[in-house]
Amino acid sequence: MPRTATTYADKQQYVKRDFGSLVGKTIKQVRPLTEQECEQMGWEFQYEDYAMVIIFTDNTCVIPSQDPEGNGAGFLFVDRVE
Image (cartoon, rainbow, N blue to C red; front, side, top):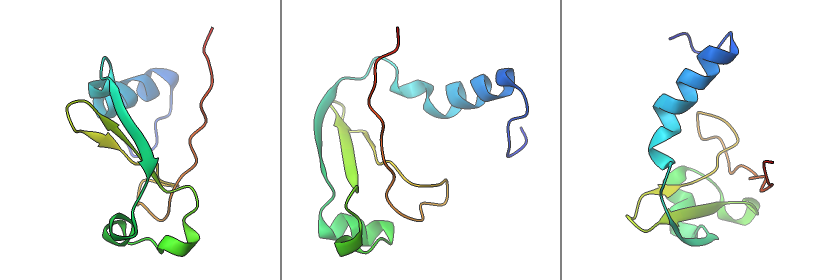
């Protein structure tokens, strides 16, 4: 698949492939990253106000990033889909 999805169907396929394993997981914890965790990501702790981790009950986790290369913490919008 090309790096940039060109159609909505391509986007659906990409999201399902890369993130579909998150469906059905249960969140155990949401917390800021520690200084050591930020260093492991290559991020400077004092500048990463939004650096956070979502940990699931099976100990997999999600760390929002500003881009696919991991060039800094990302912001996560929490909303409701009707």
